[in-house]
Length: 107
Image (cartoon, rainbow, N blue to C red; front, side):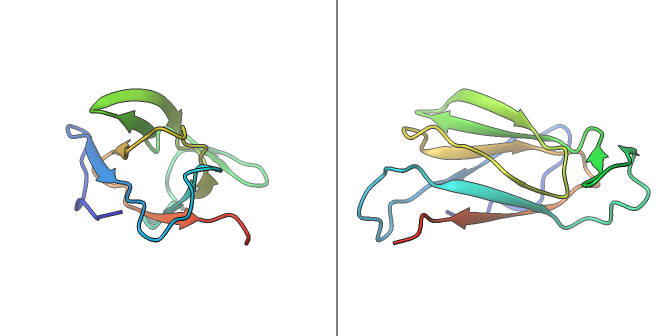
């Protein structure tokens, strides 16, 4: 996957998914999104974990078309990605930044 730089509310960015050393596309990889922005003052519903309002969206993309979008609502969240997706898109408010981490199945 390649980084695409900071995002803003008016732009959707996508990161490419590469097979790099993977023996199989199944099971599909699951990205974990870690919000790296401070969330102390972000609107939220208190809980365990806190449910944050309007942090953004993560989207599976194949051949340039969106497949499925998920709302980003936790400071750390894992998303299921369609097995035939070739990109991950994200839409974030200007003040939100994230790290995308690939989670691989156990050998």
